[in-house]
Length: 209
Image 1 (cartoon, rainbow, N blue to C red):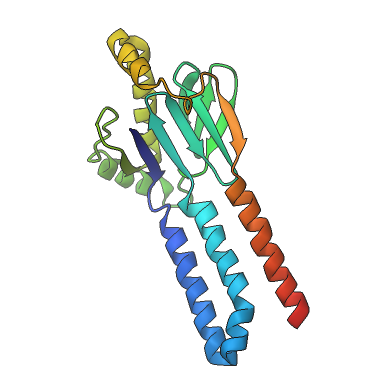
Image 2: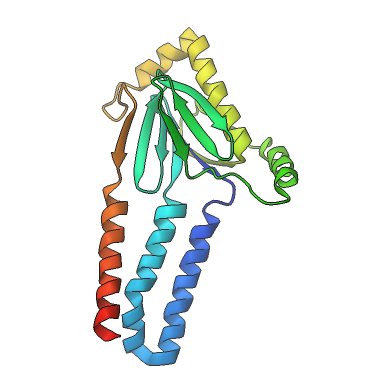
């Protein structure tokens, strides 16, 4: 069981990109017929894939073993034994006891002139969100940056200070998917998918332009 956490409205960008890609294909078909739709299809697929890679797939997964940070092309796993702090400073950063620092792409910081007012409003609304880390079913939580940092720090503190909870989690985390040390790996689907779609798009435009 794990809890998936994402920042507010983060996946909305993926929906917008997908809608724009569909509109591009439709407009191309109306303008130049089937041949132009086929020509623009790889570009539209690349557009959708970038939306998936950048705004749909990134997330945080909190499990019995630790925190998994899925970014655009890499993911990091930080076990609770190495988790030090979740920092809320122009974005979410995870610090480890081994001296590493990871940014979390899926929980962006708010920016702009109305940042502080929007941040306070969002935090108030986010207080109503229940963070249940010990439930039996996997869940997804969408919350504000500050609230997410607080909950991760509270979870780490509870694990360090509660021997019973540590024993319970240790019994659950007896799995090869939970490394004992902090690890980083590249996401092959993101890297290969982008390279292949970009190559297909460039080839078609070069051939028919």
